[in-house]
Length: 125
Image 1 (cartoon, rainbow, N blue to C red):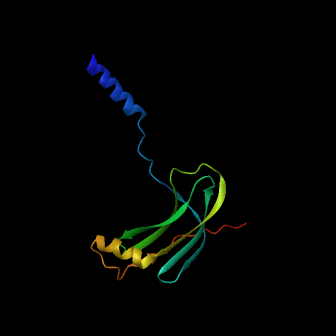
Image 2 (cartoon, rainbow, N blue to C red):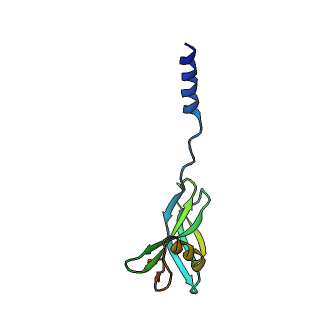
Image 3 (cartoon, rainbow, N blue to C red):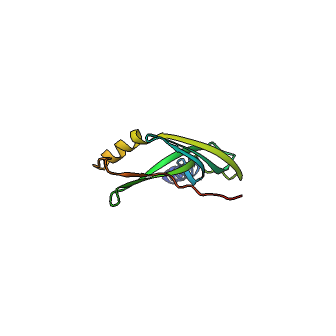
């Protein structure tokens, strides 16, 4: 009987213990402007939300076959943001300092690769 009680207590403890933190939520953005000087990339963007803390990030997609590195801008929140306001965001990244270790980890040299800036969509009002 004592072992059944211990089993029940253990099961209940598992049921009420905190669940592991949810992964960050990445959301696509509407880019408003891009500035790139050959090293620093700065992107101003708009994203839906307004109820959570947001931060921008640049993801690098290395394509060895075409020798290109595409840069995609995403907005990150801890658990998502259900609000519907349109809020501005900014992300700045030193492309060279960020890209060198990513390529080195894959045994690649950055020379000869073309950078593909984040795509913008033109909205006519």
